[in-house]
Length: 252
Image 1 (cartoon, rainbow, N blue to C red):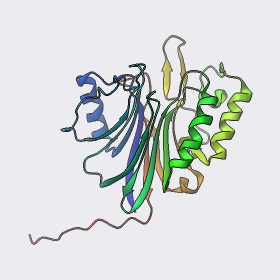
Image 2: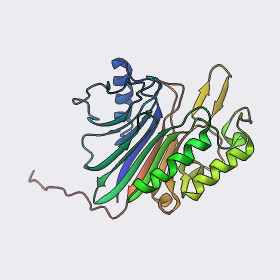
Image 3: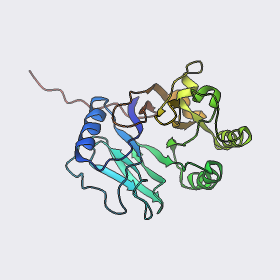
Image 4: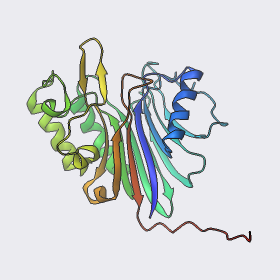
């Protein structure tokens, strides 16, 4: 089966050309084919022209109200992706992309949740994902909460009530979304965000997949904090029913 390498990363601003080049070179070294970015900080309709970038297929959602938001999905130029449809919104908090790779339909969702009222926000987003999705669904997200403070926070507690956290987990599971990293690392404690003001670590960033496709996920890792206060999360996904690559034999 062919493989698809995905990375989700809250970059905490991507307007600086120097920072963009550094991050994109890191993606190349990591052999990323699809990249989900949160907090791009692009102004509405002011995303840079990256037509010469190796990740030149660029879909993004910017905010009409703030330049501190924004989500994007970048696709490597050598990835044989055929776009079907896109769904975005004016607040720069989500982006849905649907298309075909290797005769397999994928729905990619990129979410950047607000700092408060995450449950209400997710209850609004999840039905939209269900209406849009087709084929294999992959949801990359910065949920801005530790779903399980005991396991996902170095301080072991959350400002959000336990009942609300349980309700959020219930909604994710009701929609068949499984945290791929936790499913493959059931006994390991690791984090994806460092809060400097509170000197604490949290796991806020996830790649969710439906339970029926979890067996196709391999090599799921949390990277290093270099360009942001978040850590990138990477996933290698085995594309089912993909045709093997055709090689042209040439005489020596």
